[in-house]
Image (cartoon, rainbow, N blue to C red):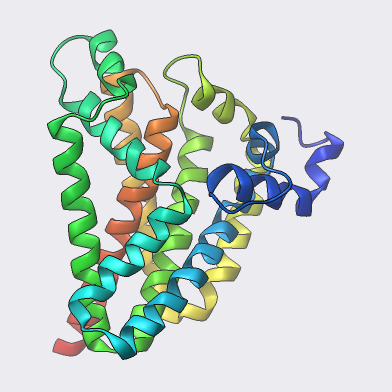
Length: 258
C-alpha cells in the first residue's frame, strides 16, 4: 500500500484491524487489508497482550508456585492470538525438516496436519519460554513483568520486521501481507516499539535480539521455501519471544554474579 493512500492516516481504525485480525478479541473491524496496511501497530498489540498476560502473572505470582507462572502467562498470550503463531511455528518446523526439493518442503509447510518436527519444536520453544518465566518469577515481580512486556513487544515487532525485509515464497495470504508492508510502516513501528520499551530500562536492550533472530529465520526460509510465508511470519514471533526471554534471564543472571 502507498504511504499516500488516505486509509494509511486512519490509525485508530487501523489498530482495530490489527487487533481483530491477529487476535480473538472481538472488535468491529479486523479485515486483512486493514491489518496489513497498519501493521506498524504490531508492537502496540504486543504491549496490549503483555498487559493482559501481566494481570494473570500478578495473580499467579501471589497465589501459585513459580513453576506454574510461566505456563499460565504463555497460555494467555497464545490464547489471545488464537494459537495462530504457534501453529505457524509448527508448520515452519515441519517444512524445514521435510526431505526433498523446494516444492516438497512447501507442501509439508502447507499441510494442515502437524508432524513430529512441528510438535517437538513447539514443545521446546514453549518449554524454554515457560522455564525462563519461572526463573524470573523467582527473582521477583519486577523482572517478570519487564520480561513479559519486552518479549511480547519484541515478538510482534519481529513479525513486522520480517514482513518488511522478507520476500514472498509463493502467492497467498502471506505474500499479500508482505507486499503491503512498506518503509513508512517499519519506521513508525520502530518508533512505537522504542517508546513502549523505554519503561523497561536496560532490560529493553534485549529486544535487539530480534534483529539476528529475524535475519536467521529469513535465511532459513529463503533456503528451504524460497522466501517468507504467513507461517514464517508467525514462527518469527514465537521464536523471537523465546530468544528475548533467554536474553533477559542471561542479563539478570550475570548481574547477580557481578
